[in-house]
Length: 255
Image (tube, rainbow, N blue to C red; front, side, top):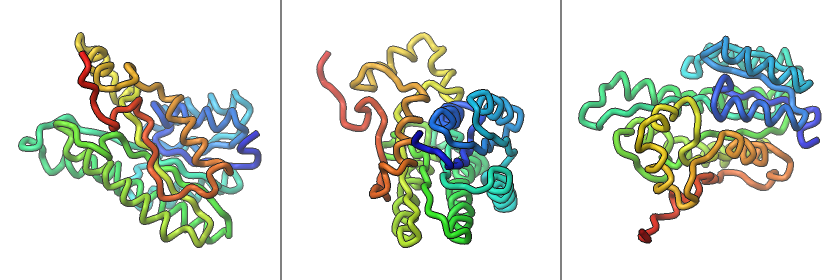
């Protein structure tokens, strides 16, 4: 299997893309540390991983807290034996017009999406270097990290920032044989987006936004994450991969 003797740490693993990624890694023989603010949800994912036949540990973490993050990496490595892969899936967003956006709302999104990615990646990279191990980091950007979207100033800024951080980490960590890449999904059917799917016009709007005529499922994003975490991607670093059904490619003017 692709990930025999590999251990992956996935933040935001309780739901959505993080949950799908944990299960996809497990099906390819990886052991998993499921980290999330929602410990109960992380435990559910961990139980699913164990049912697949892999080792799993659930860890409560606030990715914006340096002490929490340090403990997460230490515990994950200790309970699984070692770590090879980090997938930064933890994320939140806001739907607030720019002129109405309060500092606290801005800070919450930036602290989890961007600062959290920095803290988790730094702690993980320090672990790898200290252990003398190569490794992979796969960050979560978004189509909103490549183009803007209304009422998402903090989210758009955080996801653009993740792309820049990914490039910087790739440059600095290449000498340590640590590859760093990012994925940039289009609209994906997850708990974060479910309210939009429930509106009368939502599904039709989403189909028009994506040239492919549909939105993504979490499992589709997970497959790109697995590729970037695999040996097949050993010469890939500093890149961001759009998985968006053509969303950022442009708009069709056909009726």
